[in-house]
Length: 347
Ligand SMILES: [Zn+2]
Image (cartoon, rainbow, N blue to C red; front, side, top):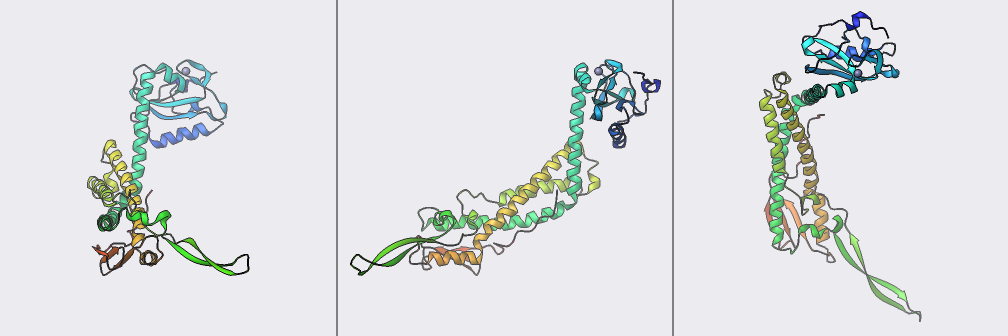
């Protein structure tokens, strides 16, 4: 094929790495099926020198099966569809070549370029995360601190509850709620007529169950404390704020990519801890809900209850025991059972 001389002429137009706008221009050109990709106005159709510092501008597949000549091997005849667009720093030029050729003929340059590209992509993603969320970090931190305090109250309560129950219960409190409910065994008298037509009575037993008991996550054997997790999130968010002048977008540009990566990771981790913590708080505090405690109290007080239990909450105190007379007292944190603070929306 005829290669116009302006295509092979060196075009040293990019002493610094081409901008995203140039990249977009190239990609738009490649998408245009009326054009051959390598004919783009800025391409310098020449062979690479070994040891060149090259960076990817982009990679592409020629749509519509169009095939470009490759300056590395077949400079004047069609060769490749899948290509790379490279910026060659020493030439200040952009060069289109076949991707497979680049890989096989310049393996070291290829590896270095891939490494750089990956680092750039990581940094781009990190910037997106930080840009989208940095402004709401102060609000997130405030919500997490509030929830951490609520969690501390619940964690303390759970510990005290285990201690109180150990005094009157051989097993664990959770065992009083098989399949999440309380049970009673009801005795019924069944009237029937025997073979002689006489009315007789026999007794039968039937298990009845309460409605589901809420918040059993609080007393589950493996329930881990929530407050220490939220304390980790507080630390991470404080770090993000400290390193970004209190959550300012303008501060991000001055950071190194490594620091941006660290902060983006910290933010994402804090966010996921915060979400999980708020959900756990909500579930666990359901145990202390008045209606829930009333269900437990009513079922635990039945004569036919499988396991007797008395619970009551009031006046900053929680009472629990086999019966009211035997109940032990746990002091409650003032804000225990409050709704967790809602978290600001973030990506
Ligand atoms: Zn080639």
